[in-house]
Amino acid sequence: MDKKFTMHIDVDSFLPATDEEKAYMVQMRPSSTFFRDGMKRLLKNKVATVSMIIILIITLSSLIIPAFWPYSYDNMLGVKPGVPVDASYSNLAPFEYGETEQAMIHDGVKVFPHIFGTDASGRDYFIRVVYGTRISLAVGFFASIIVLIIGMTVGSIAGYCGGKVDLFIMRIVDLIYSLPDMLMVILLATVLKQTLGPALEHTSLAKIGSNIISLFIVFGVLYWVSMSRLIRGQILSLREQEYVLASRAAGAKGGWIIRKHLLPNCISVVIISTALQIPSAIFTESYLSFLGLGVNAPMPSLGSLASDALNGLSSYPYRLVIPAVVISLIVLSLNLFGDGLRDAFDPKLRT
Image (cartoon, rainbow, N blue to C red; front, side):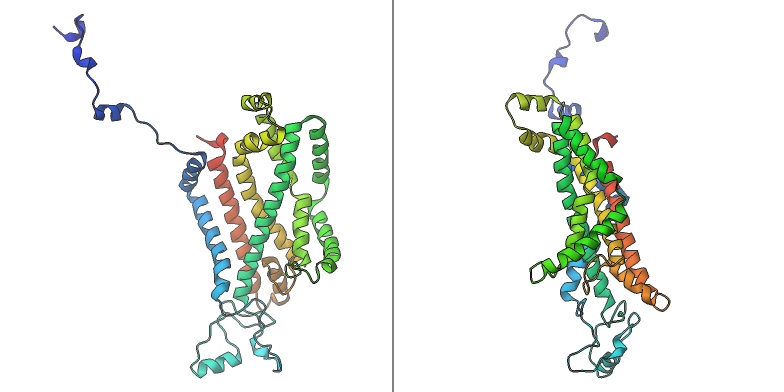
């Protein structure tokens, strides 16, 4: 008689399971963290991964290449004290040499080539592009940090306090939003350049230049509003959670709740917004430098290099193309990388 039609207990069903049966029946997922899961999803995105690699290569190149490059960004090759100016170094084509360098090569001396040629002042153009990339990346990074700090502070206070505090802060945000961005940026950069220039003389900030300082001030005044609105919206939705109510009941102060509970829970939005703010800051610095309101000469920037190239556009068009391509590559890679971060770390977009 078949066992399934009998009333007797099957003793074999009560035998202890073997290790193989336990491993087959119980498949536990290994422990992980929010950051580790996000990085796994990010690395699966090929476009974002390639963009991240390009950003790392450009950043490391701008930091490492000037350490061993034989030319400096402000070294005019044809100009030496007590020696007549050698005009043959000006406006050299890529991999072209001046008359003195040609004589040295003829004598058997090795001369490092000018990969992108030289500019009108006889300065190696490749190292100026590298330094310009470094300046643009540094300005974009630090400006984004300034925007992050101000926007996160203001947005978290407005979202947590609510009421009249939120109403007052949001009206200030709406007022700044109503201002024409480009006009205010140019106006503030011009005014701050005139006021900060004399004040920075004979100080440690004189080498950085008044234009860079004014650029950071412009970002701190105008560009934090989007970040503050985003953080405020996240805080408004999080402050009604049970763990926030429990913290209030336990006597925790508002600043502690914001630091320990609210901001860590919207860290994904903060990371994504900061990553997308960097290309915007780089683009703003580039067009300000193009208009002459960026870095002080002789320090180069990608925008100032493009502006200087306009004078010889018909004869040396590559001088405009090279910084334009570098700016486009940096901004495009950062935008694609920011989109990848959003897809990887935003919980609402998880599948």
